[in-house]
Length: 566
Image (cartoon, rainbow, N blue to C red):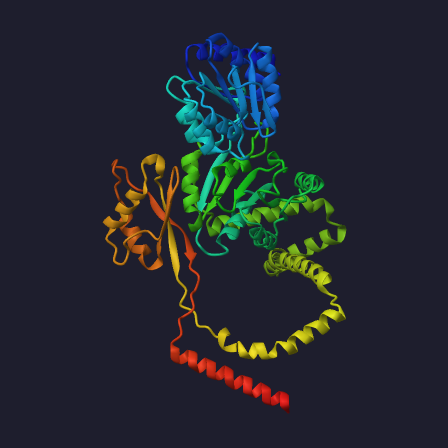
């Protein structure tokens, strides 16, 4: 533990706690700094006062218990693995959220000081249970001590910890001030077309000079198309999905460093151990639903790292997630326009020139002699066009096809052999099921209703801004759209809401919601988030058609019986 850091935290925190203020501390190794809170509580406590310490990881319980006992404070511990100590006599009540909530419900108590220690993002955060626990303990003075402030708990932190007069200390920012990594957060709007995002990815990588790039996909299925498109452009790319062994991650990082690989296409699972600082550019193929995921993808860039920009491609289906992301994270997102045809052409020419210069030392004497002859001939332009066609079209296409053949051959190898027993059983099943297939033929011809869709709207107002079911009902009634008396489905969350309506009413609703004013006078932000197809229902048959079907089935049975007799 850094003694200077511990001393500085103690100097700034102890007076604040003794004055009755809340403290909010972000530092490395938070459990090791718990002693500062314990010593302050020992100094301020009176008879019968208790301190509630809530932890996320039960493994921290033993360390904090030792620190408390060293401060001459009695401790009651309750974690999923068991209980220790006497609750009534304890000065410190220590445990995990769920267990402490059950305890305080069974045997209520009031805490003079409540501390949350060691909470981190990316793990199960029981925000509802934690808030219930803070309310039950009548949280009057609070302390937060961890290595981060999870976005999932931001509203709870602002309500109970970052109150007026709160003393905030962020040792990570203070230690890095003056040499912070400068990263640009950029987004580009793209169309709904299937290839719009892959083409935009290739163009942006070309314009940037094909630097080491990490592309994040929300779904593993997206990585296949992106890898193929990149390779067709002649960009050295590889995909990684699933849980990737450390040796494979190390090999990919080595290829990036050596220039053997320019782009790595990954999912959030496969990228867990990939060193982000090895890349100059990160591109989000789609906006993640959870803002925490965006921060995990960014990682913790160092001041001497290579990362320069974090790019998001925002399509029609990303608008809701991206609007929510901008409201939560504290980054300055800049919108830019995709490259023009002229900019793309110049970038591709420059990339060809750079690649040629890098490989010039490998050209043999025959190649150099042919180059001089071609430069002196009259058909230089035609020959150059032919070579460019091979470089930009033919060779990448052949490499892509070769990769597809390799994957197909692997699949065929696994399914090549089929046993004779399986074949004979299949033949028997075919013969025995002939009658059933013919009898059920009429059932297979069920007619379905035309396909219908619902449109999901993203509303930029949630429960924290006063959005309720009554407000939603009032909005839809004031729209006065024919055939629409209520939202088909709706979900109200803390910072935003979703509402579904039939596709035929979507355009009219969107038009009428433009400029809609809420009760507080603010304008309601609204946009289409996605389309949800409804299951197609079978058309109900009349009695006449049912009788006809039964007659046809009876005729089929008679024909089969006659054939069997013959």
